[in-house]
Length: 108
Image (cartoon, rainbow, N blue to C red; front, side, top):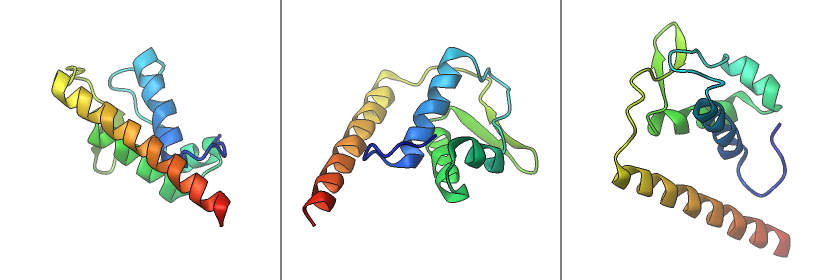
């Protein structure tokens, strides 16, 4: 379930799915639940779930197959260190931006 933490819901969902992939709960080759199933599971809109899956696609963790669904990548090749650092920096910046937006919203 998406929580009211100031962090965007799609990032919370992406974080949870990413962790499931890292733990092996979602193994290479496994399909992700459908967008509708994920929306129900996380109590989120379809658009928020699609954004979360898009984050995982951009990170190279999942791949879509037209008409079949979205699957955890099988190649499992770890990204280069530089790419990992860039992704970590982007996550950090996203979190910081969410905090700034939350602070500004409280002041209004």
